[in-house]
Image 1 (cartoon, rainbow, N blue to C red):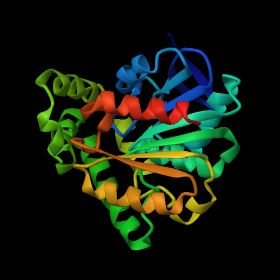
Image 2: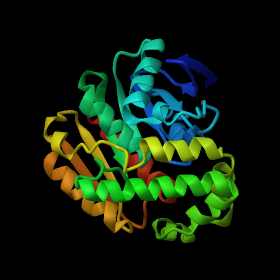
Image 3: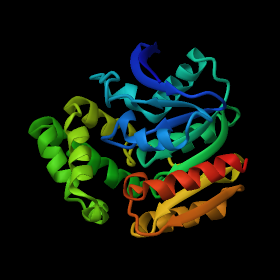
Image 4: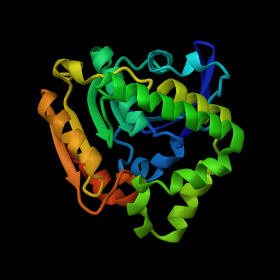
Length: 272
């Protein structure tokens, strides 16, 4: 495994690259970083050239003070520039939550760069304009509180959300490790990521799903009813989608059911 960074479009992005074969790009969720994929990387052996990236505002990548750098279109161009620097013409895309929204945006906008799409607890954004505006205001309010109250406050708030209720079943050491990773975040990076890439800011992709012809694996946790419903609707509109609902898992399947997650990802990739 090699670790390091690349500068593209004026920003530093931190990467970890391992294995050989077809490229698989891993995109983490909000508040995460490339370290969340450690178990998946080990489970996939060296059959793929795996690139795990810290998305802008997270991990060891840059945290610009200007919100414009965090917009989905700008971050997407950065990701493509990273692939260009690595001389990767196309790749398999795997994204979790926010990273899944980014992966779907990339596959819809740049279909020639995407060999396949694996979406974990992802969505095409909010279709209703008024709902998008409400969410945008909520995201901006949370961003201001993160900047005012700090990262420790945010982590305490975030961990109490009903979205993570299913994680109460996890061993204490796993929850401690996740909390430590979250506490390593930067307030400016998190706040601007919400403003630029939050669900309220993201252009909706529902109307473009029928044009995404890439083979797609949709994964949703059975205990995450909201995203099960979203992914059922997505599966009906994506031309080549396979929806799999994972039992005894909530929003974060790769943490709550890692072996099942790895098995489903491997099976999908090997079947292409």
